[in-house]
Image (cartoon, rainbow, N blue to C red; front, side, top):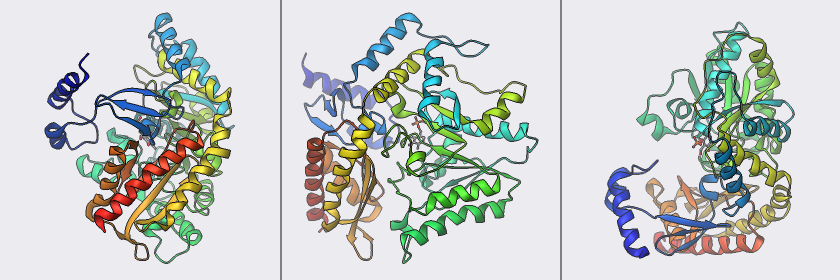
Length: 453
Ligand code: PLP
């Protein structure tokens, strides 16, 4: 096979026919992109012959890397046995049943039920349907409003995009009128002269003020990621979550934890809710549930909501053709089997993540790094021109875009969000591999500093 000729042809076809997600379509049609054709352990390969350390676990999903053959085999076996049947009309299938049971076992104690979807976006749409149904059944049909946070990412369907707080997305799609947004707990960006603890309380109390403004009888739920991931790995101040929990508890507001990124070990425990001591009534998951091998998401439904749904009578008029798809659930089961049968989450939390976070903090002295923040196996570096004033390195995030491109060219897949460099390496990294990541990142930072210096 002439890989070079194949690559040129593939690139041409890609540019001619393939519209890519979250991409400048004109730019891509003109210049094309990288064609990834192979992966093993924590490395991906492209058809130009480049090997790259994947510092983003795919799109925050391949937490166990790319060589988990038992997942692939489980999917293959399931496709041979029962490739598909729906879960409508009083039918079920074995992998869906077994995965539902396993999820009830690994998630916090309040969760015994799951509603399956194909993605995190659909799972967050499902949250809206579940919450509205719950309050309707309770005889509180006026409780329909959601509160979320600016710069949150909850997915890209119209409803999930509305729940999210990404301004560029809201510009291109009209948001749902029953979703309202408060500020994110981003101390570096918005904290001003306040200490982190004080700022955390202040920004959490925006939830209370918003509930007052909209009316407690109208607000149904608050949705948030334990750590805002796509928004820039925004680590909340210690004071933030206890205050949010207090407000939700006192005000009869359901708390939804979107664990699409935080779930399955990323923050150091199985779920971000456990790391931050949150007790949500609903919990969104996707991505790492199958280690990215198959599309699968869902909502864990806590007893408070499940008890009402299960005793309400009448049809819950929501579902997806592939809710509880047997092969996707087989991938989920095989992934949970790996996680439960190994000490990957514990080793990542106790050995790899401390090394990763410690090494990243060496960049605190770097001339263009304004803040290093992180928790468990993800982190962000804010790039600045001036550490004291937090002045940006370049307009329109061009400093971080440049740094990301340099890192990518040097064999490290990392991501940029705004002015922050983002990393979320697989949990199965060794400390030596973390050192390689740090070395490549350091080179990209130096190159960025000299370019903008
Ligand atoms: N929620 C969070 C926190 C996410 O990070 C994402 C995707 O990145 C989603 C929801 C949407 O998931 P999906 O892309 O599977 O629809």
